[in-house]
Length: 273
Image (cartoon, rainbow, N blue to C red; front, side, top):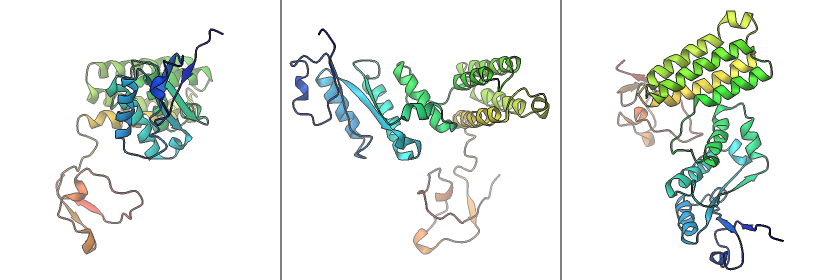
C-alpha cells in the first residue's frame, strides 16, 4: 500500500535490532524509565542502544507529573538526555503521553507545570537546553491570549508586550539583574490601582502573569546570588534539636533541602545581616 511503518519497541523487545530487516521505516527506542523508577542510567543505556541500531528515542510521560514532583523530574531527565546524546536533533523521535498530559500542562495556571509544556515545545523544535529557565516569550504569548479574550485592553497589552521585549533584550545582553528590576517594575504596573480602576486588565490575568513573573525572577536571581541570602551564614537556634539530630553549626544554611514531610519547628536566626 506504499504506507510508512513506524515502530516504538520497548527496552527488552525481542530482536528489536532487526527493525530494518522486516521493512520498518523508522524506529524509536523506549527507555521505559518514567514509569519504572529505575536508575537514570537507563536513559543513557537506551540512548546508546538506539544509536547502535540506528533508532531514535521516545519521550515518555503521563498525567502523573501534574501532581508528582518526582515524575516531573524524570520528564526533565528525558529531555536532558536527548540533548546530551544528540537524539533531540538527530533521528526519529516519538512521544508517549498518558491521558491528556500535554493539554493539561498547556492550560495549567501553575507556572511550574506550564513550563513543562514550554520545554516540550522547545524540545520538539530542537531548541531545548539543559537547565533551561523560563522565558519572557511565555508571558508575551499569555498577554496575546488575554487580549484576544478581552481580559486585557489592546493598548495596554501592547504596552506590556513592549516591556517584556525590553526584558528579553536584557537577558540576551546577559544582564539578569536588570531583567529582574524591569520585571519587578512590570509587576508593579499590572498591580497599580489606577490600572485596575480603568479595567485595563482582569484580576485573573494579573494573578497568572504575577505567578509567571515570580518564577522568572527566582530563576534569574539564582545566577547572581540573591535567591538564598543566608547561604553559609552562622546562626543560633531557639530550641536545640534531639540528640539524634545533632547540628554542627552549618547544616541549616548549607543550601540543601530537607526531606518532604519532616517536621519543621526550629527558628533559625542568622547572626550576621
